[in-house]
Image 1 (cartoon, helix red, strand yellow):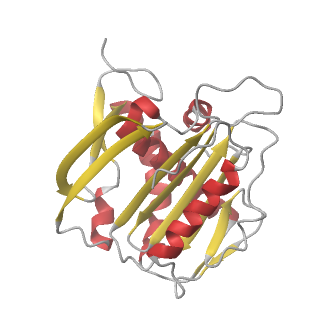
Image 2: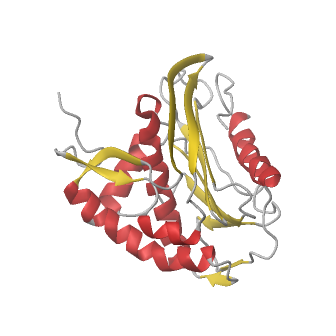
Image 3: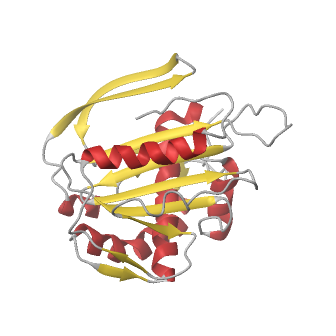
Length: 257
């Protein structure tokens, strides 16, 4: 059976760049890199790939032409001027609408990167459906953060799905919470989400140095790129989000950095 669009179930599928073409003007992607993609589930490797490619020319075949060229393109167009300002390392104030636009784009990117390991997707199916139906990031059970990065490395992608449950519930089979870290050039975006009404994130993470929460948005935030994260602090923050989730996980999960 032919694979269908992950959003609308239509066929045929088209290829979608994980990162937009215009992004290449703001990052150094002239070198081809050796990549290794390994999916590890409970200690068992389910997929292992080695390939050589420029960092920002990766594509996945997961969406139809109508989605790709329609509402997904509209999300991209809305986020582009905000992202360009961030990539140019300009201090700026992000109003509520801009924060939602950026968080929506970050969730869309997390979903598309999920297709690199589609047999073990971590972003919740209900969040994927919410994005398709509302063209927005979920208003409940989703979080996003923004930070500047010193761009020591050309980019990062780290993901983790966790099996969380309410007290007394049956252990879940599929992830009920996820954390995804993305960086491109000088911009870091962290997305997390859950289907559990009792789980809340943010209070212990908001004061993290150099990081601003952009979703849920409650007030304008200031992005100040003059104090960027290093690779060490980037990974530390990604781990902090994971640890915040892991304290509620069953069974204990391992980070996939």
